[in-house]
Amino acid sequence: MVVRISPHVFTGAIRVPPSKSHTIRQFFIAALACGESTIINPLDSLDTQSCIAACRSLGAKITKQHHYQKELVSYIVQGNYGQIAQSDSLIPIDAGNSATTLFFAMAAAGLGSTPVILTGDEQLKRRSAAPLLEALCRLGMSAESVHGNGCATVVVQGPWKGGKVSLSCPTSQYLSALLLAAPLSPVGTVTEVSVPLLNERPYAEMTLACLSSQNIPWQGSVNDVCPHFSIPGGGAYQPFSVSVPGDFSSAAFLACAAAVTGGPVTLLGLDPNDCQGDKYFLEILARMGCTVIWEQLSGGTEEYLLTIFRECPLQGGTFDLNGTPDLLPAAAVIAAFAEGDTALINAAHARIKETDRIAVMAAGLAQLGIRCTERPDGLIVHGGGGHGVSGGSIDSHGDHRIAMAFAAAACGAQDPVEINGAECAEVSFPGFWELVDGRS
Figure (cartoon, one colour):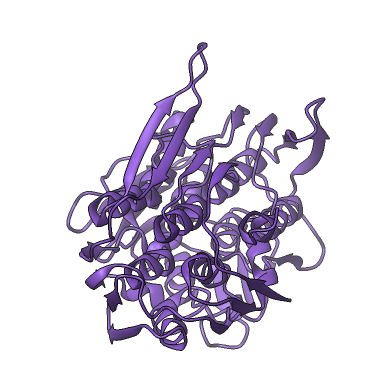
């Protein structure tokens, strides 16, 4: 699908889609829980559907409910009591484009005695699962890549015997996968994980917060130089009811469009107290010259309004994205409209996402007339204060964050921008194109 975005001031009041990170964690915990859970207002996207399918394959029963408010949907999840479905043959799981689903399901599969075969789309098959596979093997499971390249398709089979393992995490999803499954290992087992490299620490913190909310015992800290975690087995997840908050990662693209055009835009559904790492984007906006205002609604509600606008030129700066590499595409676009250089640093792991986001953003911005300098761990964008950002044709490379970042750039460009492969935004933000096309 090709979408053509013409320059226009991006403004209005928009409800942000629910958090993908929270959604997938809550579905996996509910799927492994001892009873019936309710997940209210989860993200309805392709990645969520992949997650739900994976949880069903592991033995959970999941039904969708529509409320009298047609925009509000909930899911009833009957957990499998930590007992992975039994089968006389391989249990198949297709994670689609969702790396989080793939890695979480790999670890969960190790809790059962039936082999589980896990795969995904062509993008996901290029993303390494090798460190997690090795860790699962060291914890007593059988875990191997079918093609021997450390990537999906992979086969995992329990039992989970526990023990000590060292796991380098260029993506925190490896660690989160172990943390979520380890409490359900057999009574008497202890899983100890040393993490000599941990990127995206806020998302490991989110997983630990999920364990704490379930009264699951664990020891360790993501703030240590070399984190070490200890999780005893024999635990159980209890049924729960939760409403999923808005997604700061998705909100970044709406905020980006407001920043490059001036706005204002008001975003609903976000919680300033949420642990999502990508709320760091608001600090980036403020440091570059935007006004960022939180306002709590009156009447006893816990809902907030977030308003973003700009009345002065954007200014370049240096931003460490180690904890939040998903922000790199949107931050690079804002940098293109800023005066002077902007350095996006400490984000080498942005190269191992759906695409090499550092290289793809540099190439795409160059097509729009913006010069960039690639570094091994980041990108320097040589902004011209918004001057010289031309129109053109951009290839999303099937990466939802690339597509949405260049949609924001199109709002402030001199001429229309065509984005090829725009359908990939459905992975995390259904309805995105209707919001940004300037005609609704």
